[in-house]
Length: 124
Image 1 (cartoon, rainbow, N blue to C red):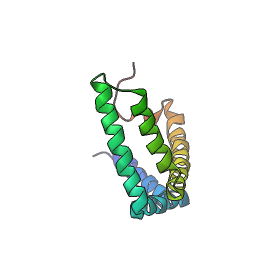
Image 2: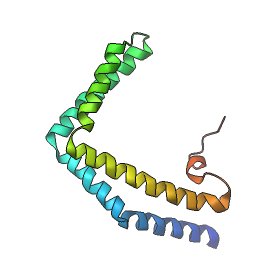
Image 3: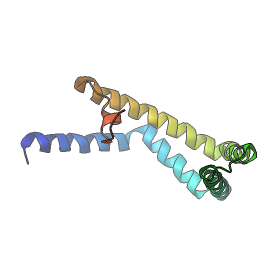
């Protein structure tokens, strides 16, 4: 392995550690843990996922209805209205914002959207 590759991997680990130590990441992890520990949130997540899955199956079969979509949206609204979920979604959005800044900083000298291109999928 070349010295340059080793250095890039080292910098990647340092970046990962810096992200993990960032206050917004810590807030995100705390909010995520709070959602995972909240019985009501877990119940509503399960209900939402079930309704969403049923709707997706109906859509694939060409049997989706507006009523089915409204049920999914209502379940999502109910879930998102929980204070613990609101905190989680806010923390998640803030963390995504920080990661977008990191992506921009990496992408700028490469003249490419590093985060968008790193997935290996072709752009049409």
